[in-house]
Length: 296
Length: 158
Image 1 (cartoon, chains in turn blue, yellow):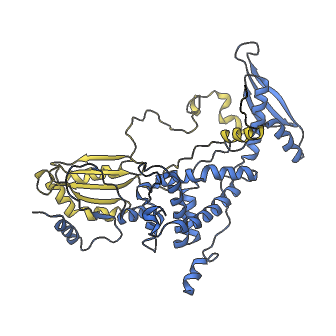
Image 2 (spheres, chains in turn purple, brown):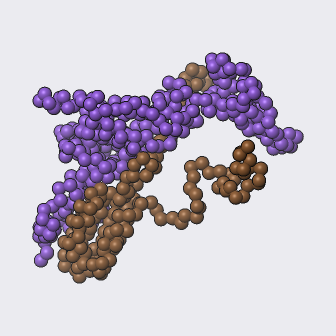
Image 3 (cartoon, each protein chain N blue to C red):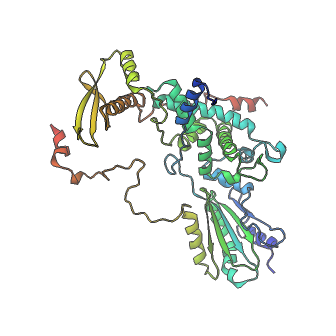
């Protein structure tokens, strides 16, 4: 008879030894009674190795990925959790996302920058990235809600992604961490329009032009159609002197003016630098972890 | 009748936050970094039945090399007595796909494995449109060959 143990030996014997880095495991099933849950999708050491390879990482510390995926709620926190890594990762993320947004949107005010960071790199967005990495099945945690397993998953997953960034920083250094953040997280499309709050765009535009010492903005009707019908359309341009700074449409002149002012503001605040020039980061700049290991 | 009303200041705050709800942005695979969609393959076989014969041969001869060549995929080998051999693939988007390889020849199994590995994990659908856009235009895809002469690039020369 062909036993499981022999299968494993045979598999191992063919290729010399079991691959160290490759993710292969043989699961021995318990009693084969009714197949209540035919889908076995638990996390094991191979899951972490595969996750590492999927993200193109090679941690020097082999147990680091396991630690990243372990929440403090797992086994009442008896195993090493990702709390400390998460704390570090949060700071690392803040730094690299901050320097990127600062360079990319030179005209954006501080409050909006904060909102952009919150919306695009907040907990739920990080959790979305974690799902994309396939981290969700690798996570080891216990839901506070008991039976309902998915309650709180977003937060745990988001924290795990933060811990992952922290682990990359700790294990591979600041340059690798920056590359990781840039490649995996900073490539998402950022929508400025939803973030910049404009209650009264016309007034804001007047204030802006005053601050910039430009001429007073004037709205001019550019095109119109069907003024006396049930569905008129007006196109209004906002001018600073002779230069048009924004354009908007609307079924009334007032609405078109409003949109034109909004357009002008968005053009100014949402100005994007396409090829961002970030300050050079050097491996020798930050040697916090290296020094620590040397002294030990 | 006395009605309870929140103070105006609070109302404004709540209103402002209602406007601010922003859906978390989804990453686009391949922009910046490509994350392999297939994350796990489970090989099920039966030791006794003939339908698993070539599956067991595959596991003995090629499975290790496969997992070595594809470190991004977790490979699990698992007996499933008195059942046909199946290969179950798990994808990062939460979907899974199962293929039965009963009575397959030794040449057919690697092809099945390859098709499961290379699948994106998304539901199969018919792609009718040539361009997929986040910001689709009302006027359709721009074509330089179908605009009037006025808008053509030749105007910009002088």
